[in-house]
Length: 72
Image 1: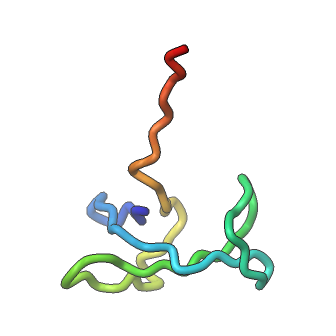
Image 2: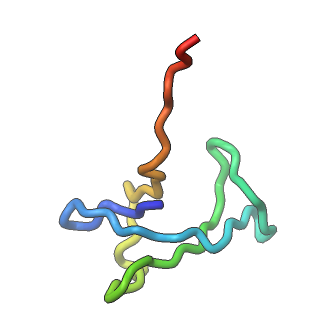
């Protein structure tokens, strides 16, 4: 997953360690649900994400997810 953008417009690679909804651990979140996500930055020499870097307009995206049309 990728988290961002930061103030420079860059995204950081992260791993999702856990998802909680109403203080209960869940395996996946439904669209438009309110959840808490525990993330950890990936890679050598990467700084953890600090609270002041999380702001309105931040995204947690999967850059590898692609929708392919059926070729039938």
